[in-house]
Length: 119
Image 1 (cartoon, one colour):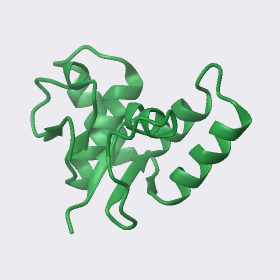
Image 2 (cartoon, one colour):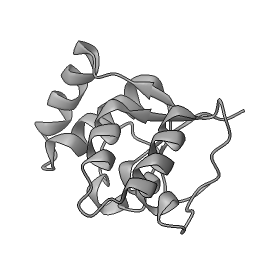
Image 3 (cartoon, helix red, strand yellow):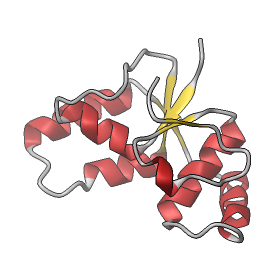
């Protein structure tokens, strides 16, 4: 079974009743930063928050480690981007997972990062 790291936008699309990805238990990981980004989403209703928490619990949540922070810092030397995106990219690379995102433009050109817009 192929494991992937999904970006925050995939979580948001999923709870907005526009599934962009099939969440198969044991095959999906997310960065702890995606938990933060998704749960702070403006206008999130209580029902959406509950669905989001269920979805998050079905994923393996990867913490930001020193190794991931180091990888993201190296990426930042050559690629401009939001800190959260750089850390998510660093997480995918260090874990050896493709990154599933609808915002491929934010991650293009990062050496060693496999991008997928859908699975």
